[in-house]
Image (tube, rainbow, N blue to C red; front, side):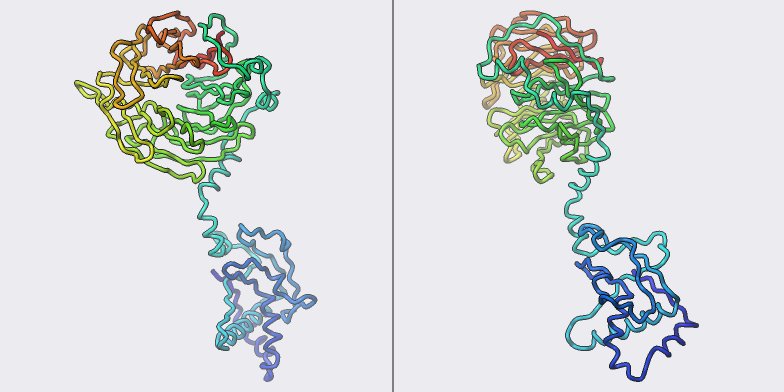
Length: 501
């Protein structure tokens, strides 16, 4: 848009006096002076009036331009700002404009194919609603990376990070208790009995906890809560909260460590996905989904790929390198409760809430990761949903937690047959998303319970070894430490996290 000031009464008189019969000889000088009075913004150019005005000349306009911002202020990815100038009168404006019209018309008709196009003229007053001109090339570059700009903005403004006094040092340290076990194999797991740490800084129920997968940094424990926050704890040495990330506007249902241990992927009921840097709190990746998120899992071999599911019949695979959806897995269900990758990551399982009157033929669905084809939905035929799935660390089997107050054992090979001889029962689920997990050596199977207890089962005999009265509210997760033997973390529906040994 061009803004031009006209003054009919004075401009015609001044223009007639300025034009001389010998205009052809001075037309070149008038062109240079008039161009210096008008600022040009050609597509793909960032030159200002300072570069177009000859040095040491003030032009025929009888004024000297004064620019508040130096030329170095113009950034290549920003629109050039308005350049404020001081004008001596309306006559000088009309003279420059008329001379510029004559020069542009003569250059257009000269036949060399080069025409100077005036697209913008400065004004002493900035009109409301007028935005500076942005070249087409810059508009295309800015529009090509909207997700990156959005994630950068969220990383600097939306994500509130609270750091304890010694948080930065604790994130990088290697615990003295873990060092002796780094070079040796995992020993036999024993049932923990004594309480070490009691951590209760969450103001809402804790949905999920996970130890850091990097062995040297496995003193850190990740927790996701209904209080809209994600916390990182030093659960081995001090039991203190190291950092709190407030990136979500609703409850955080799922959170996972990346394989490198430097990033955290989280999803919640605000339908947002966030990949957050652990040390800086900056959001590396952010995206809005079409549904509330309830399950997240990283691919076991491709560290930049993850799968998310929630209150939708679709499960999506994302690539963090491109910030785009790789594949969509469609099933006629209403909600995805949990996701489990099978060994090597070629296939994965989803547990859903699809329960019919007589059977649950779609409760557990097996998928081919590459082709997004459904391998089988005839895995579990009983009328119970499965809130969580877990894989055995050494054998090709997996366990499904059911709302029938028992855990079922399945083969991880096709056709994923159920083991009817083993059933781990005695605890209570009662509609809670109670998790279950094997010990690192595969000898014990641990699960929470809706009555606040923790049950330890012998994997081979499926018998209860011990029961631990851990919480007053429903215990929704219990996980063993990957390095330290017999170290257990539990969380409950009251927002409490406890460490046992």
